[in-house]
Length: 423
Image 1 (cartoon, rainbow, N blue to C red):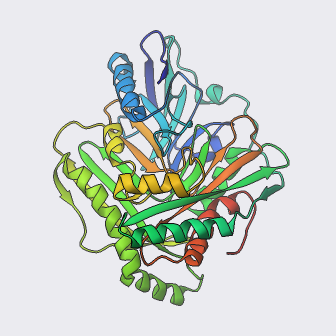
Image 2: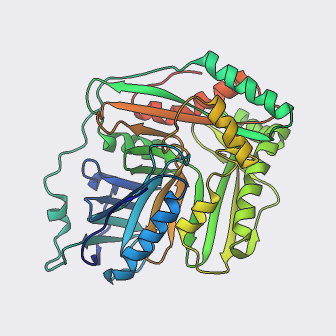
Image 3: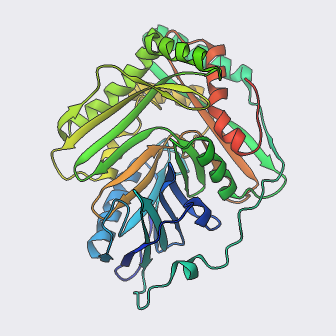
C-alpha cells in the first residue's frame, strides 16, 4: 500500500554550476539529506515530492512512481554530470513485512560536487520564475550543535550467543548454508542529536565509506549494492570480516590470514554468487575477479569483490536493487531459508537497516548502497536512536567471535556519538 505525494504539476528543475565548496557537508542544513564519500557527492534539503510505500512491492512501486515523475518533468541542466538535474533519494526496509516500508524523496534543493565541479539544483512543483541563490536557499541555518551526553546500551550477550548457536545448529543440519543475524542497541541522549554532527564525524573517520542520511537513517556504509552509470553497473560485495589491531605489521598478517580463511572465503563466495547471478540476467557481460581483495577500514577489514557488468537493456538502478536485495551479504543462502531463520531467531525489526539506501536520477542511473554501520533516529524523539550490526553465520562460526565482530561493526556509530566500548 502506497501513499503518493507528487506535485500536482510537472516538476521544474534547474541545475547551474557554482564554485566548488571547500566542505560539502558544512553546507548541510538541519535534517538535510547526505550522500558523501571522500568529500564528494550530494547534499539536499527541502521536499518537492515524496512517495511512501510498504510491502513486498515497495521498490517496484517506487520505480514506477519515479518513471511517472521524470516523464513529465521539465529539466534544464547546464552541468550534465552524475547527480545533476532531477534526482530523488530513497531508503527501503530490509524485510517485506517491516512497518518501516520505504520512501523516495525529491528534494527542493541539491548541491553536488564531483571531480572539482560543483552544482546547485532547484526543483519546484509550482514552476520556477526566478532561480534563488544558494545563499537564499540555505537561509540562516544554525551551525551543527554539539552532541549531548549519550548513553548507549551494551546489548544482550547471552541472547546473541543463543541465536548464533541455534543458527550454527541449523546450518549443520542442512537447513541452509549461511544466515546473517543482526542485533540492535539503544542510544539515548540528554537532548536532541544533530545528525550533521554525527555525519561530520563519520565522514572524517571513514572517508572511503558513503556518509549518508536519508529519512532518519544515518551511517557510513562501505557496501555498494549497485551503481548504474550510462550502462555500466558495479556492485561491491563485502563478506568475511576481521578486526584490526592498529599495528601495521600485525594487520598485514591479519589481512593475509583473512584472505586465506576458509570460513570467511565461504561466507564471501555465497555473497558474490548471489550478486553475480542477478547481474548476469541483465548484463551482456559480467566481470568477477578471481580472488577477493581486502578492504581496510579503521574498525574492520573485509574481503571485498567488485562485480561489474555492461547492461544489455535499459534497467534502472531501482529495478536492479529490487532484484539484488537482499543479497547473501545481509540475508544468507538460500535466501528464503535464511529469511525464515532471521524471522525466528533475530528478535528485532531491522527497519531500514541493511536495506537499500541511495539516489537515482531522471535517466535511471544512480548509486545505492546497503544501509550498514548505521543508526535509526526515532521519528518522534531525536534524542533516541537504534544502532545496528550484523554478522554472517556459517558452519564454522563461533558465538564469541561473532559477538566481537558485531562490536567492531557498532564502533563507527558509537564513536560518532561520542562513545567507545571495547569488545
